[in-house]
Length: 409
Ligand code: PMP
View (cartoon, helix red, strand yellow):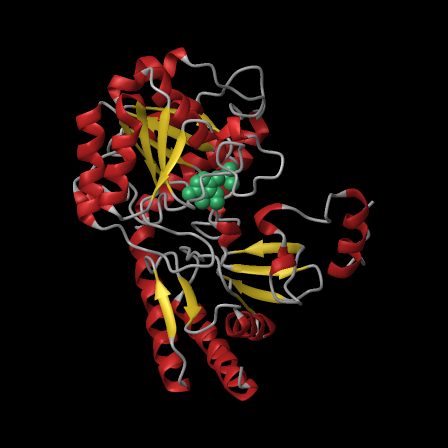
């Protein structure tokens, strides 16, 4: 029974008895500085309130899904209207078809889509479709890239068999020679090359894609009759609605989408080209909740608002303001701060800070001043972040830089 008086510490103590480790997965704050909230009471726009009543400007956006602002009125209205009719039924509601049509219109390379719940579902289905279509086994992926938590891709090997990873091999992101060598090694068994639009791994600088690498990946797949799979789970709708590699003139055969699609409502998708329609028909994939109507209604509203409000432009403008402000402050306070990746998905790391002593201290100081940053995972901007939020954030980070300077770490 939840007691209203339960604060973060009390909830953690209770959780430690009934939830393994008290908390698990990417939202576990055990690796964040002390004082980071684990439990939240409420969310609105770009703000979060923890169970102890503290208010934050949130730069995690639920680790991505919050694209338009928490509890966006149009999305909530669409979800409520569908909830009044039915959600998880014996078959889908008409909104499934409409969402399919909208996504095929939105995602440039897509001729069809199928829906699931999480990003891991979507990336895993991409592999299955690729293998069904090509009749080949080998999947090449960039070393260290996160594609989800299934045995074939989870970053932690505990409980995972070598066999779960059979026929999955790695190359280095943005390294043409490394990709070519992996393709050669795969020989005539290459089913697909799987990539994220840019490198966005934890604890390291993000890397924008080298256009030469992007085009070579496409060429190699074409030459070998293999498929190019783009994992847009983290980037989707924030970087470019039609696809993150459209600007390079490179289209994937398959793409995986999740996180933002329903602005927080659980729905993910696989998109594919015409030639793969038959393979997508032949595989068997499903789930009890995959056809639930409320998330699909929410996703239709999310796509409408995202398009009307030009969300990817907004997050780029606002993200640039944050990046410029932080760069100016770092310089003024005498710190080397590397800000990497697209401004819509910021990540910053301090120079000479392998143990993250400065990064953790800085993030904790900002958090104490009402700004929720992450010291080693990329962050996210949303449509709800305004100029005023960035100004307020920069006041907090200026104070955090001052505290860091005084601490002399
Ligand atoms: N691919 C990428 C690039 C991701 O960032 C993630 C989640 N962070 C996933 C796949 C898996 O998504 P989910 O957690 O929804 O299963």
